[in-house]
Image 1 (cartoon, rainbow, N blue to C red):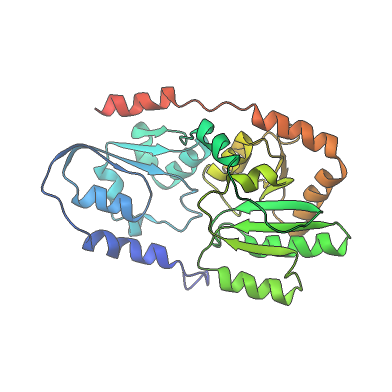
Image 2 (spheres, rainbow, N blue to C red):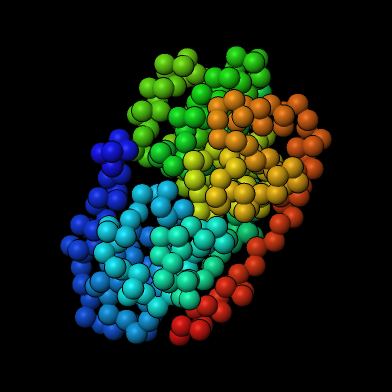
Length: 298
């Protein structure tokens, strides 16, 4: 971290949190660590269970995890579930010896509930009449908001009438706020904070933008697809597995200029954007086969 000049406090604290958490005497039939890091360390080291499984949601090496940090936790799991094929491929680059017990288990999504909640009260409260851009996600290095702010500056300089909204909070909020002020984008790049029901925003936005440095399999993209948003996303692991470029969204190279180009293309070709949004809304989510992995363990 010193070498890369990027300190990840959560990675440093996961082991401390796992080692100091409560213990249970009871033996369980199955223990599931639904998040890499502290959840997996705790489940592997301190939970008494006949079977254990752990989920991986991210590009493992890119996220900053290492074998040394993990301390052999995956050796103590019976199954490792990755949320996409690319996540599995990247995980096995770090842990090739676990190929036989690593399976793909896609994200669960209650599509009917998402559609219902999208119709509830909420969403944008300003009277802006230009193109609304939306991003949902924590304000972290992975999500690349620093590059998004630069892209918004390019759009403004090009005379594109758009406003970029962010739903989410995180450790880099102050840094991004300073960058926004320095760029003179206080009215153009709006940090709305966390929200209990983001779905009305999805339903009301013109373009959903997912400009991340790396990804596992984004639930935010899936939610945008369920609600029929046209999506522009960075061409990185995870995102490219969810979007067919030019069919149900646009994949762009991860630079401010290319992000701005993709957004401008969608704003200037509304019929094309509408066709992509329709294709996105017709994607099916089916986890019946994935559940067989759990049944097999039990």
